Length: 97
Image (cartoon, rainbow, N blue to C red; front, side, top):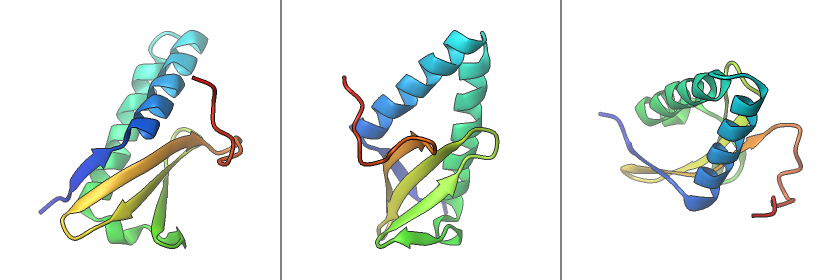
């Protein structure tokens, strides 16, 4: 049975920002990014423990077609997605809203 997956506000902001960036580069590329992201979300919710813990207690899942990393934590029946960020960015720096 898949886990419930909750995307926190900061991650939603990062997803929206990435979508708009890719759409500005090529029409439809943002949609392709979202499709790839949701495929990864599906994989995470189906089998979250296959993704390694990089910095305890957080697990990381790299997208297959885009240089973005999903940072999440697994609980009993729930997964929290904390961040979806471009791997060339410094994860400590926060983008200006």
